[in-house]
Image 1 (cartoon, rainbow, N blue to C red):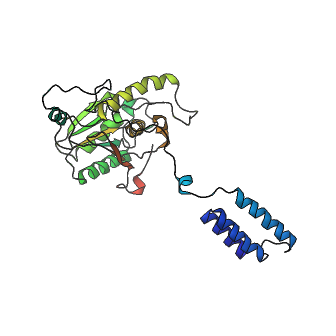
Image 2: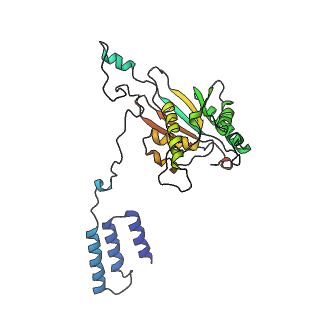
Image 3: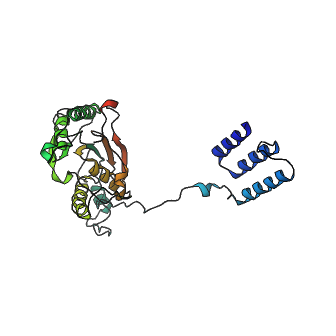
Length: 300
């Protein structure tokens, strides 16, 4: 039994055909597989030799994942200074084309902190009744404290016009003195695109058609590289909803947007996107709620 366990362990860890055959031969030569030695053992060894021959040789190339999907679209936000909206190269209109190009290039990095609203009353009959629960208000306080503790100079706090997002934003804003509060209907919750894999309890096609256009419009308004006139890095907070945030993340990273439902976000969590002047996008955090005690965590 000891050799059999060793054989299984070696094969499980190494996974190579040479190790498999070596371990099998050593165990079989000692009779730990049971049965008689001699012709039966030779037959088993012959079978193992065939097994080894059938195993593909290991090479680095055979174990290197191949790139999948499309290449990175450098003009994903239609703000690449080297291109016009129709994709053609810009024509220089000055005697110093390099100076014109430098003036038209973004120089600042945008940091966008997407906050999911706190826990709310699910039994409300309409949006006005779906206000935060006592725990939800605690969560919003903790999120506000966390944002303040980061010590960043926030430029604006935009929020969905739905009651739960508005209330969450108002609580957070108490911890961020002087930050402008802006309301936006585009950020309301909805079904951005039919998820893949599909779910049977989700929405009819008409809902995706309507909500998807609105949420895509919100993405185009808020998720893009900095304007060339922006001189300093910015930090912007957007308080909205799980579906909206997950869709934004997929679109910004150029992942298949229909995969948005494969992610989960806690209430009051922070998702941080960074957009460089070049248009490159990085996800610094996804649904960070580590600043909350375990008994305060919810996903409703």
